Length: 173
Image 1 (cartoon, one colour):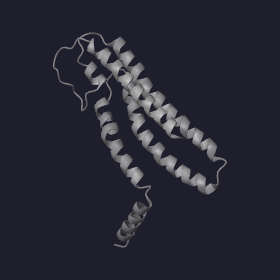
Image 2 (cartoon, helix red, strand yellow):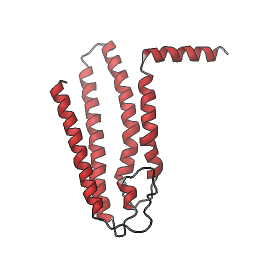
Image 3 (spheres, rainbow, N blue to C red):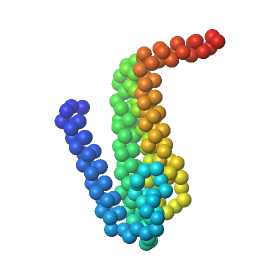
Image 4 (cartoon, rainbow, N blue to C red):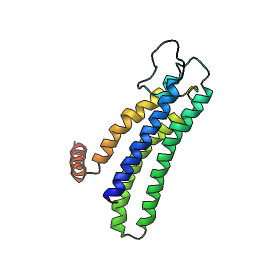
């Protein structure tokens, strides 16, 4: 990885995010809304917004799944492919190097799964279907980021030593 590749990844991520947002915005701007102007959700997202539309949203729902769902699934698959590539290249390393890399990868994979699995569940199902979007969104907007900090903190050696001391004191009581 060098600066040029890093900059390219940032530009691609921002560009894809921008065009993804523009596509959803243009889709929603043309829809007729009626009834209460309150979204029954924690965040203003496209799927809960579609529940306020006055006409049949079957086609729009498919477009949202194609746009949002596919973006989430593709990003997840790219991440999985990168981890498989890392595992493939680890076969030539020493056991200590493999252990260190696998320790780092395991925390990354845990964080990725905690975030992407609920997102995939939310964005792959149609907007009209009765699912737990509201509850699941709390998981990927609140719980996953909170656990992410905890997971990465537990990798810190100083934190591991402090936790061992706390557990030792608790076990002696």
